[in-house]
Image (spheres, rainbow, N blue to C red):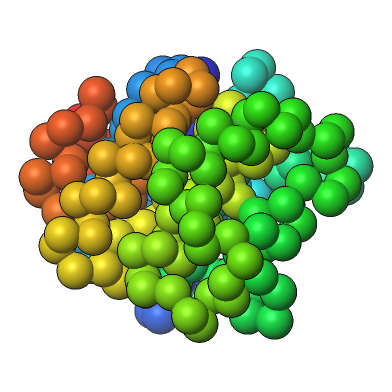
Length: 218
Ligand SMILES: Nc1ncnc2c1ncn2[C@@H]1O[C@H](COP(=O)(O)OP(=O)(O)OP(=O)(O)O)[C@@H](O)[C@H]1O
Ligand SMILES: [Mg+2]
């Protein structure tokens, strides 16, 4: 469960102030598919980056598993990034000079070793067996995103954060990637928090969080 209390983020000050999140309160249930929607500039990326500890709010509390993650020290932040969350980006963010296999397992470098059985299962689920030896530039967008999903899942995190993971894919690849993402997350009992512009995808979510004028509509 993620509990967000009075979360505030503003850019700039005085007349140039832009309040992106205006003391929002939210409870995100565990093991569900949560869609975050809202028009461009409404703060979707800002919100997800705060849950991922990529960015910090001005004030407020973000509780994950009962812990205030904003109070974490460096060691706890590292642990949180390794064990609790996995991130899927819009532009895949694969490392170009290593092959796909290494791109996946690099996320596991500093964590307890994944089980081979789990890795093989992921590979099968995501249908990436025949591209593991290739380099990212040799792949289509959909293939790259499936590798990035495997990387996000390799440490078996509790929560997957995905910021418009299909924003760069055509509609066919988009559907394929979303349905794979949903099915692997469900299979491994994880929570999926996904920013999307696509109302068809949002409709399939267990909970839809819409950001409007710095506030939340559910
Ligand atoms: N580093 C920054 N400095 C100043 N303003 C910023 C910064 N980052 C974001 N903003 C502003 O905060 C607001 C929210 O940005 P954010 O990226 O969270 O929106 P978004 O909902 O993800 O939009 P999109 O759908 O286009 O990705 C925007 O008005 C943006 O201009
Ligand atoms: Mg965004």
